[in-house]
Image 1 (cartoon, helix red, strand yellow):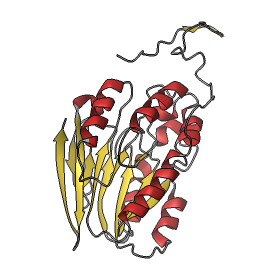
Image 2 (tube, rainbow, N blue to C red):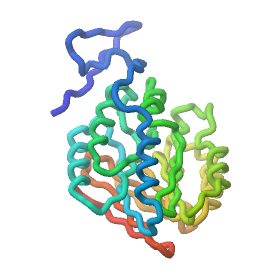
Image 3 (spheres, one colour):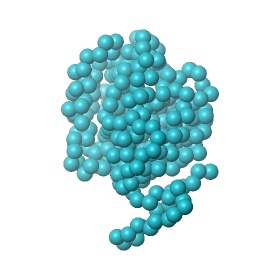
Image 4 (cartoon, rainbow, N blue to C red):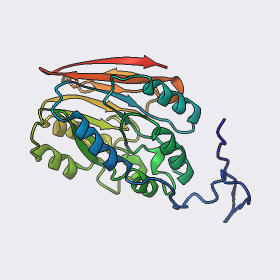
Length: 270
């Protein structure tokens, strides 16, 4: 069983313990060991491996915060398969935004045989979490092309910024809509928090949905955060939102995107 983090808060001071590497001595510590820029490196692998493919299959999982053993079991289960092109982590890599949480989870997910990318979750924004996320994984908004499908991955954790920043970032979304990529025929939009969740800015929920409908061949949307499988036509416009369970429930979503605007999904237990 992996050591868990315990925090002790005292007024205007921090307790320092010596001889215990697992103790996170300060919530704003930013010392990073090991691999950085994980998303960019794995996006290059995904795009190369999926080049020219008309059918792609990927796993979508999320909310691994504090469930290290279950995440290790997920990795082992996925590694037994030989039919998956890549995996997407829907966010909440950490629980408290602490450096070691990101490092531990990165090291577990790096054991995946297939490349993966990780989104920013609301828990990942706590303390110095966004800075740590950026150093280890990369930008909070990013995209990549897998076969003929463009995946647009967004930060939608508006509440964590007290609405002081444009979250979601419509400028980024517009740039992605207008970007012309050779072979791009379909789009999937992924986020941690779906519209009408507490952390999403409800004032722009319908504007958000209006914008993303301009994406070429929009297939469906993905989200984590809710800790349960949730499948909804959220706006009644035919665009389905697929929400994955937290990893503690030992479930993930498996999607197969086929030619001719067809796709299949499966809830997989491990």
